[in-house]
Image 1: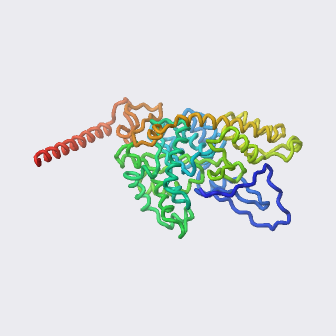
Image 2 (image 1 turned 120 degrees about the vertical axis):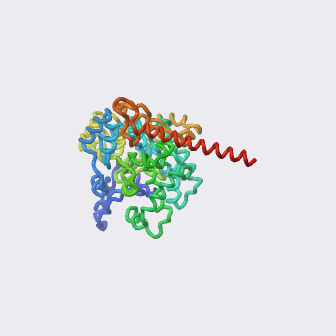
Image 3 (image 1 turned 90 degrees about the horizontal axis):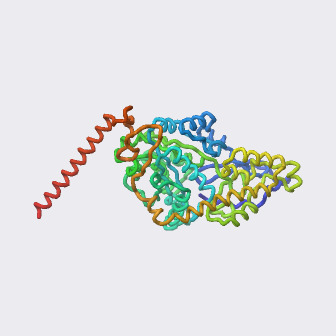
Length: 484
């Protein structure tokens, strides 16, 4: 992501200069590389208008009826991100819920662009949510480290630098607490080839330069690697890219969709991916979008890995966290304690309160803090102190888990190997939903728990193929012996 200029460190934005020339407000800009809120007539940056993004991108809001269906199908109360509209938008989430209800397989896919040696709390929120989804659905998760993207989109970074970031970011991701039996983390530089590259080229052949330019804003000066990367990120949404997880039978595996939890700025990639999937006769990926965790400087911004004062990093000490919140966290409060008690503050723009929405699980406690702040019963310093406590505890727990993210653990998560998962526990099955013994596309088991005719045919076919391979190998050995 391109660096953004650091906002001034202040709690109350300055008043507009009445003598300054008036200019038309700049529109908000949200794309995979830049996020900026609209600048109003008064020169202030507004919060991101997520309803406008839903209309612009053509997604659907996650409404109460869908949250109720989620709870009905999974047996789990929706995550606080879903309850609070932090995760607010979706594409075909209903399809995933239908598949889970029937016991049909799907997988989770998310990623990380390794641009620094430490993730910040804005990065970890999607991974926390992915872990929760993986635990709820009991499905495999693939995590893409786009080190190639970070090289292609940067004028300064070297290949060696971004590969090093991949290793460190993998340690961070492992420290979220993922189950290695269900999770595959890969570096594009290390994993590209074979089935993955076949899908990349299939995807690339369907996307013209004019389409890439229209969707992503590329121009004649954009290097061809940026344009081609679109097909790499898209191809990861296809189950056939991972034969070690889902099996070698492309026709059978092509029907398995994925659910992609991501920030809303990544949606353009997957709008294009859904179009290409339909043309390739692959399952379309479903998406569930989150809003951004504001930079410390306030609404209309996004934390940046390249601006230390914009973010709380996962390597920060308790003192650094406290100092950053106290010094940089934008306040929705009044200029003095007396005015705050008289008029109250605005939690909708207060960074400390916004962070508590992400980290505090108790809905009633959060509501009370917001109400007290509005009524002036809670001062800005007191609100910041509550936020500091939650962030210090969150980062400390993460750092403790990271001490266990050894080289061997990194190798395990990044090794190409079969994964194990069970899916919906309410659906009875006699074989696991792993690659070679999956019931994918075969209608599941019979009602009596026995293998279906299609499953039996598949087993016989696999035996016949194995016998042919053995016969060929024996023939080859015999010919070697005759030659000698």
